[in-house]
Length: 254
Image 1 (cartoon, rainbow, N blue to C red):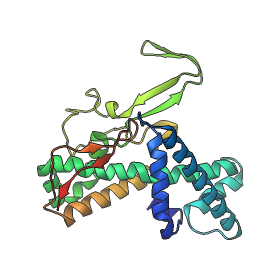
Image 2 (cartoon, rainbow, N blue to C red):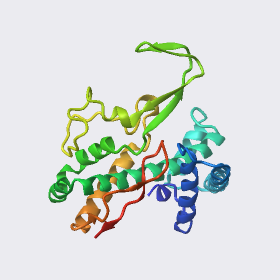
Image 3 (cartoon, one colour):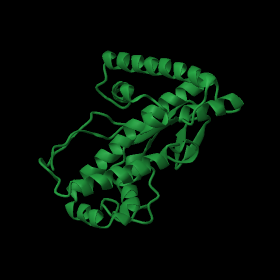
Image 4 (cartoon, rainbow, N blue to C red):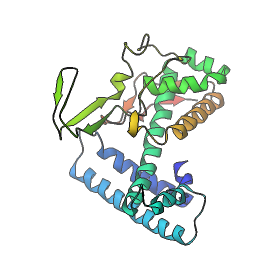
């Protein structure tokens, strides 16, 4: 979906998935190697080369795609420089693929662990919006994010110094009993759900509405298309990644 919004030819979709996977392996992977770093760097360079060429084509004739929209922002000169334009395209491609894929995978995995709630959602699709919000909270695709302190400050008795990195544990915050009633219980009809799966504030995920829509459509469609889908094994194999929570293997029978 994000590739289509960026008007990437279908013939390149698999290559873009390969590049996106290489970048994702770099973030939060405790077992990353020099080869992983090299693959991620080559992926970023390849994506940068592609978007430089794509921007050059659109400077001659703009379209209705997301790259053309970003170019209009860049040409205004107030928000994006040309290099930032390329970087934004790379981040949109990567962010619009990896985290949304994990939202769908984690969501289906969670529903298969709660078959009664999956069946209720299949029979009552009107609950899909609150269901996806709850799945985002319950199995957050992004487990933590970091920021660099721009000045010294103190928060809840803890001192932070300018230049220090601060880690925000989003997955833990989404199970905070002070914010969520019975936080370890899956409730697809939960109404008061101020989860942080998309972050917050100035860095709130720009693609949150697209991710929500993709999750709603994909999860509901799969549940309805395969009403007898069930898990084959009790255990799932997760990707070795602290930042992105996503499945590596989970066997199902349809």
